Image 1 (cartoon, one colour):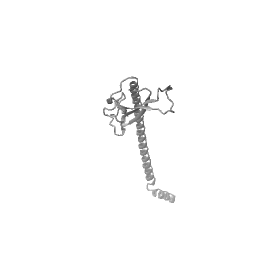
Image 2 (cartoon, rainbow, N blue to C red):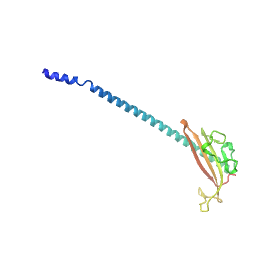
Image 3 (spheres, rainbow, N blue to C red):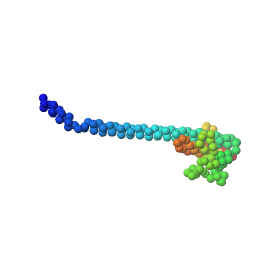
Image 4 (cartoon, rainbow, N blue to C red):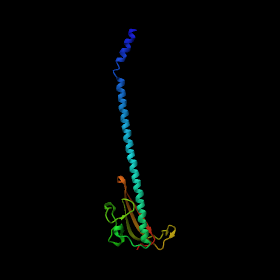
Length: 179
């Protein structure tokens, strides 16, 4: 019996804490995986928030486009064209060139202010354009009187939280002359 007890003590003495070292290595690996998962979740949360801010900015810009289109409708219905300080640019007049958006300063006085916060618009009147002879002369189911349509380019810019910026353009065509 003495031999059996001696062998058991010999086997226990040879391990020297190998199980402890292996469990610590596994714990370190699990900790690193947990930290990586938290960082990934935080990044996904930031990306989702930014996508939401961009969507809000786009919605606001579309609302500003509708406001500017209402200004054009009022002008075509017999109202006077807005002053240049209200964001109206008559390109056909020759003294007001087409707006170059790549170096345009939005906060200046050549933009129209919107009811939507941090939003501005520009209305550019390009004049009358002749339709080709083969074009169907209908807009919204109504025949066009004559061969001309009058073209406006409307650009809206909206700033939302966290620096989200949206720039939306619309080509607005009327059958009645604004002048």
